[in-house]
Length: 425
Image (cartoon, rainbow, N blue to C red; front, side, top):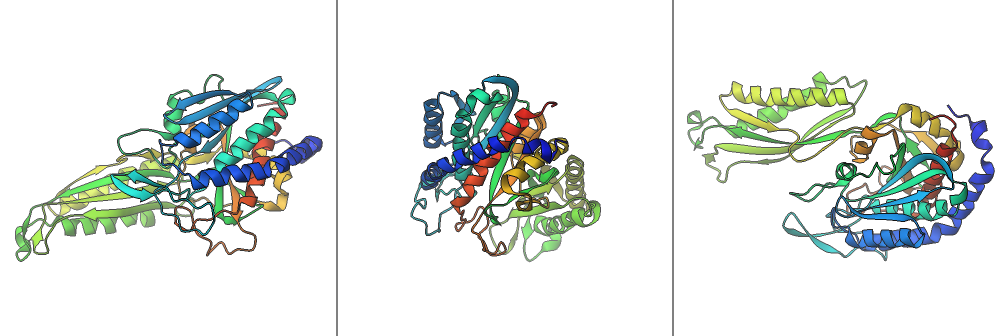
């Protein structure tokens, strides 16, 4: 592990980063507010990508556009040899109607799944983009002393691609985001609306859950509702399946080690009160925090669903994943240990806190499957606010205090520079 003493030797450089970031703060906030007012859904981040590309080109940074449809990659080659460090920001908004009172609130409408919806940066990706644009400008000013190459990855569709399309981190990797030059390590952050401004939280190992969506189709035999004995009722079978699935978490998962979730979010069957239908369809999501738990959950879900149906004389089919799968967001343990002092020197040791794993998911995990990665959380909640009542992500009232962006710029810049200073990788 690199000691705090070693990092202290770079205090002059750290002070330079802090000064440069401070000078950029209002520009970063302005970028963020502009993106917030003009959000775009996944794989449709055309305006956002254009602004990013023009910014990087204006800095003289090599730019690749159209990666994974709308993604942008910038390559900054330092003045000295060294590793290739990737920094990633996601660009997409969500189909949410904004309800915040800020003057730059979104009024954008778009079509999603065939319906007109409001569009909002309800997860903070606007802040991620603005922060990384600021980091690009800051590191350019230190180009001659940069010991390696920085690859800025602006990624579309983290929240998932539109129906019938592919996108996000997985597609960026397939289209060469980690190659030419080959990336050695990757860092990313996520703003958090329930963590106070000025604080950073992190976790080694599994920090965000894997996610699989699933579709369950239960087939029985239709009958008049007055004569249920003539049926094989798929609604009753579905109810039994839903209840039995919960035993996977309560009886098969070692809850002292990791959390897990099996949720059924939709159930559709029948069209009249006195007709027992022939078929029921259910959709759900599965979250786990290790590859082993994920494998066990998938196997047990298939077993529980098919055997429960069979016991009632029905049949059932499980498609898992149905349309999307993200692996566990796994922070490389050795890398996290090495880089923790960098975060502590940037934010103050008392402001860098170990966090519990969360059952939300992130497709940054695809990058981490290919190269060592560290993904941490940045405070965006106003100081003194109550995290229990602060609006959560993916909601109309989601709110970020953009005074928290400055720490994000400094943290990503210092992680990059500190990693490049490390003698052994």
